[in-house]
Image 1 (cartoon, rainbow, N blue to C red):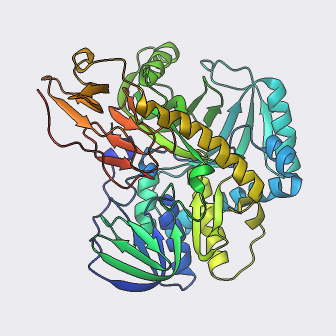
Image 2 (cartoon, rainbow, N blue to C red; image 1 turned 90 degrees about the horizontal axis):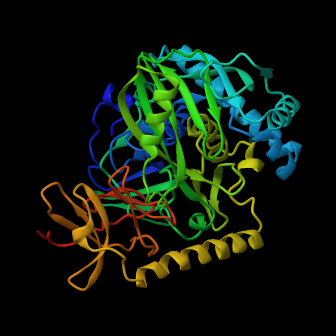
Length: 480
């Protein structure tokens, strides 16, 4: 399940950390956010080291639809209502500036990344579109109402944002990573003060930036109580129409569409991570593809994962009041390509001591203590319910699991997760997530063990795919 981006673009390998070192700024994560933050800081004259657990761009960046847009769903009307016009304008201005910075970098450096200016169309019920159109215009965004839509779309109208773009994320990332000091296959296990501990050695830094998708440090910050993760699924289709614009329809039956060379990307099937026991997400997209594009052919399929915040605004800024030398960029709510650039510009200014007018809307400390306590309480109740499952006996038996699938069973008197291969061999895993103890659930669409509490994922054999967990769940031994 490899994306078209990673299938057709291989970035140069970087060495692992060679041993202990000191630097001015350490950035954790070499995805789009981490590389852009490091690049902006280095351009500002700072000494920066980037530590990446896997390969550069191997995380969420290679799963994106790669849209560069200020059109983030039905967002601006809600932001004005919830946060007020001033902060809504900060959000709009930050993302507008991000688009301009992408254009400046790509054209100024001559980066070959399939950069294509286009419009971004939001499809929704007309009453909601009218509200969003008025809100967007109030905030200075170039938006218009249109009924000029592709005939196959089950929508009668859209709000179209002009001056947007699409691109190849890994081609761009590779160009931006040139000249940066990046150490790959160097997972950061602990951060204590300004000392980052990895299996290869320690890094001492004057400032630390967490750009690793989901912060793995629980305290301070309590990001585990303020975010959840969601998954979405994508198909790359051949023999489907070429679209000039990109399209997005929010909601449970929503979809996203964009052209990428000879392929049309169709995405949808969103759900909270760990809540897909029934499966069928890819099949739902394939059925939609057959209805809309008879004769199309699937060239690739893959999935993506996104951190979601309560107010749909990312957390970008100081990690926590008690750690003024730590910074964070997370919670991009499915719009990480644009907001990664906004994060780079904002954190560059904050670390360099420059006041930035967008800081208030993205401030990770924007929730009052009481609100965080309430979120933690609500999250805690959900976690308690999920942890209780650990003490419930499983309904099925290993013999009932079909080859190529997994499930939770009693094995030798112990409650475990098992994956059964095509020969009938069982591969047991520990079913408790090593992050905060929730029971993992089998995802039949991807053959993975997913945590419904905070979104950690493990492959069918128990190897870690993505955090915030840092340990694997492999169980000793296999069973015939």
